[in-house]
Image (cartoon, rainbow, N blue to C red; front, side, top):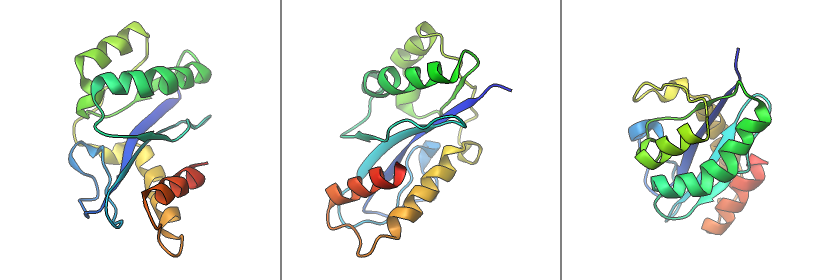
Length: 154
């Protein structure tokens, strides 16, 4: 069995959204005003650093800021049979990203639309949110929220 490398995005935002938002990319939790979006990847053998995504994540940014520096090295560390498990979020499916994935010879799992329950990273996001929510008092600002997310991820 090939190891799978699951990855996704987490957004902690001011509004309360559905448990799994459109495309299963953003998970929303209550927090004051503003939002912090982070990206992380997990496998049975390793965990990437938690990456703070500032602004809108486009396919080009996704390729340059996440795939090249974080995903490809993690997959290489796992070995030649590693399989990338992502979802159908627009930045993940852009033409530039698909070309990069092919050129980098990344094995990519075919993924059914709207199926967040199949992605193991969702359990990690749930645990991360629970741990951050256990901090009392709640974070005073977005910088502190990001710091706690990094701390709990580590």
